[in-house]
Image 1 (spheres, rainbow, N blue to C red):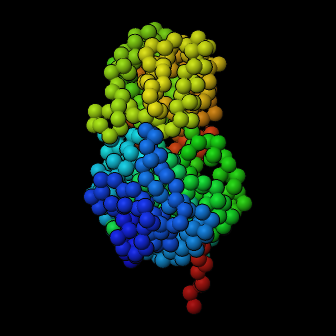
Image 2: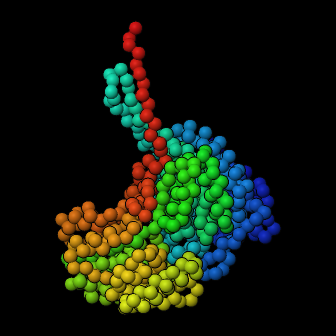
Image 3: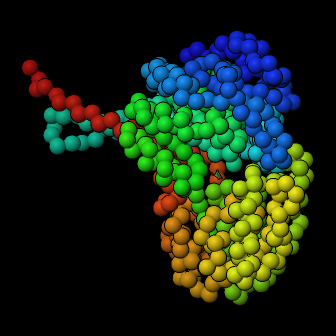
Amino acid sequence: MSGASDAGIDGRRGAAPPAQAGAAGLAGAEWVDTFPACVAGRWQWLGSQFRVISPGGQPSATVADCGPAQAAEAVETTVRAFEDWRRSTPNERSRILRAWHDRVMAHREDIARTISREMGKPITEARGEVLYAAAYVEGYAEEARRIYGEAFVGAGSDKRHYALRAPVGPVYAITPWNFPAAMVTRKAAAALAAGCTVILKPAEQAPLTALLLARAWQEAGGPPAALQVLPARDPVPVSAAMFADRRIRKLTFTGSTEVGRLLARQSATTLKRMSLELGGHAPFLVFEDADIDAAVREVMASKFRNAGQTCVCVNRIFVHDSIADVFAQRLAAATRRLVIGDPSDDATEIGPLVDRPGLEKVAGHVEDAVRHGARVLCGGHALHGTYFEPTVLTGVTREMRIMHEETFGPVAPVSTFTTEAQAIALANDTPYGLAAYAWTRDLSRSHRVCDALDYGIVGINDGAPSCAQAPFGGVKDSGMGREGGPWGLQDYLDVKYVSVKLAAAA
Ligand code: SIN
């Protein structure tokens, strides 16, 4: 496998950067002003660019703006590259993925700073995200060697039957802004391990990290054409080219349920395989036997991760009415202690929300809840820029918007229940089914509740279940397919049934 690209991301080799570049490059970069796209195995600066604006409102960087021409070039490239990559041995793929992991780790501080700068994640969390992202690459370097088939007994003794695994084909991946590194590697590392090639369209709010990851891939000796990254201000024309072409065999998307539905409809014309990791509305049930301080810690870990901007963040907290007041008071006390600040500061725990529409949604949920009778125990207000105060609400009821829509912000709404059956019914009263949590010391109850929760992920006494080894994904309106661990690999493999008829001995 050849790994060299003919132009560096820093423009010091190959095609010249445009006049305004001032690009510092990935290696040791403080910050890079202008980013090219990674199309057809080359770093392409393109005549058209768009600005990436940080949540603080400052322009972060300029990035090449891909359109239909780049999409068409990327499709031809990925189809050709697939013919080579699918024939690479599992050992070769494993070796390159392992080297990719090492290059990501070598650049981890640059990548973390880029995440933090482009989408406002506090730097300590961004560093954690890079480790999380690298763990997917490391995991899939190992899984690449574990693509197994089965031999099975069929109808006749004169036949031998096998179920083999074959890579699905070229993949179109659309990744979100809230995890600009981990959602890229969770998809791309699994696809590449399976022998698929990838065209990646990162979120327009946060496309820079994906380009750094592609550069690290090439440094690792990964074929440039196997992983292309097409930033685009308007994703529609790029996606349209992918949906129209039946040679792109799979769509993998992380984002909202609304957009997921639209993409699923568009994929239907060319019947692509789909993995959709969509919205969530996670409940957290706190039973009367809970260790209240431990439950508060787990709720905090889940609710305020990335300022509440993850699909698995707790969105509805249901507490047994015998402990609800004390739980809410302790949750509010811990919430008040959170450090709000500049995302580049090591002490910051809560950064800005990604953009104004995000802020307006959060503020709207709080206003609506208060109008319908909720009480604000702490927070409740927008601050400067796109910051929103970490907030705890009590007296939250079913008619409030916050109980039906994903908030994607630092707001913890608390309501109560009296029986286990009621708690389960409340938790399942949503079209979403991504993650759910419960805190109890009762072993039997924990299993009963786990069985009854209609969710893809259940955390028992654990508010942070995500890890690279685990299957991540949801049911119902939260999507389909699983990412992570061996399950994530299977999503990029087709089953090929082979039947061999044996001739009788002469
Ligand atoms: C997401 O919000 O989509 C990902 C969260 C995680 O991986 O834990």
